[in-house]
Image 1 (spheres, helix red, strand yellow):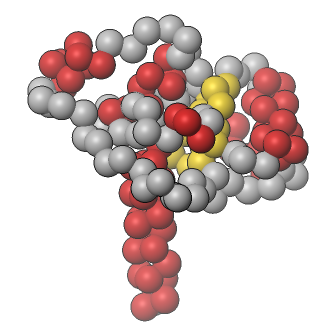
Image 2 (cartoon, rainbow, N blue to C red):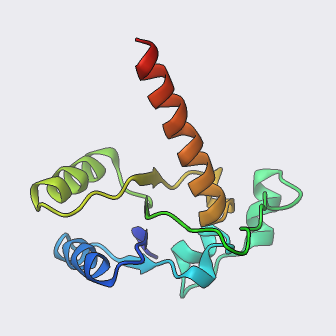
Length: 140
């Protein structure tokens, strides 16, 4: 199971982040451009199995929430932290900053809801949330 999922198109930056993840004793999965329409749960448990149908049944959902990425969609950088306790997450992120690595704008924790989303769907939600926060900050 991957503890960190990354979509970073820049090879040099991706290599630096993967090196940091490995140095922290964590496992990482790389989301490729062909994966942006795959269910995040499949990517987290890759190469192991993720029983989508069993998860849907257990969660009470009839089908996975699915929005297909437009053909020319430019996927933003994305980091998903999976099944990490809060203390480990905080240490990972503060260490990331201290290591001087370039920031990744869109970050998320894996949840029982977004495990059924695609990286594309998650990116859309994160961008909307960021826009709402920035708009709120301007009104203060």
